Length: 326
Image (cartoon, rainbow, N blue to C red):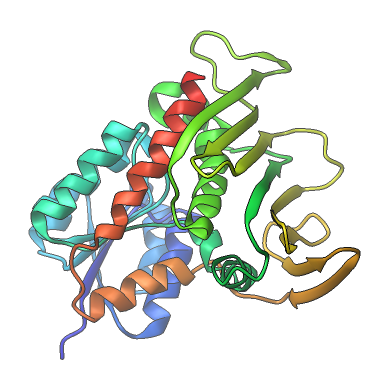
């Protein structure tokens, strides 16, 4: 059986990392590489010397790839994903899929119409710790979950200017970091109905105004069953370490939490709590970063096509719309 031929559009650090993870599985092969930076494209080409370097998405699609991996600036995700899907390619896209729910819905509609596999790099789902916590929650080992507390503070913030341009990014730290938190909570809980969203957004310590992008956000998401989800995220907040990342689930029969270790962006510990007692479920190391990409590659190689589960990509985007509108 021939391996799926995959094209890689955008090969900066994260695009190149996902490319390397996919190719290491041996289930797909690289057919094309495209990036505006010749240096960046060359670094990716070193991973797949037989792939064709291309100057545009049109040139890439002319090679008729089976899949396209998109790791470009956020403003480009929707149009590039739709063009790839309509050309008959499956798509694996960096988050956000769109800058709004309407954009995300347009991509999902294109995937449905083309009957092609579509996934977004919601990588934190694939940490070993969250896999264990999801098992506890879904198996009702924690009882009824009445509260979820989510945190993602990045002490540095993005280094690309387009992140700070609302027209290009769609938003600030909520679009960059909060999207992971919203997805993680709703995915773990089985995507229950959201009935209310309130938020407070700040830029430079002041309430958000005009075309600014937020660098600090607080939001509360209320579900139809009464569960309350509290979300906090920021760029460059003073948290005393490189990053503070956590997802805590509180039930009437116990709790569970995923937390980063010593300010790391990559190392996580998961624990199961019963009263004052705590059981460690997972500790570092855990090489989780490329697992979402690998999952998509394996599913593509298995011949999977449109998955109705990707409709939840729109669900997550709608919550972000409500955070910005609140």
